[in-house]
Image 1: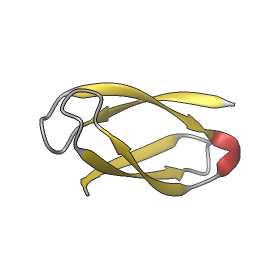
Image 2: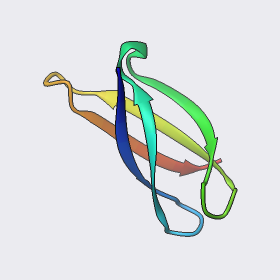
Image 3: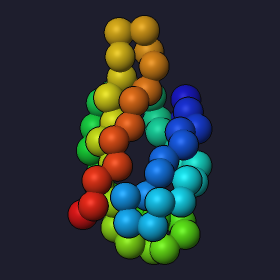
Image 4: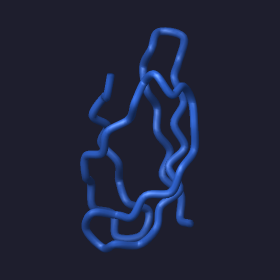
Length: 59
């Protein structure tokens, strides 16, 4: 099941929506910003309640 997640780009500051597959568990991966196209390291963590937390870092 994919969950929509709002991400703020650490490069340009724009917010965009990406999707995270909850069945993959907590993970990290690189995705390009949908606005400025720079690479972002997305760090996904799933809390005990199932809430997805994402951290966006410059890559």
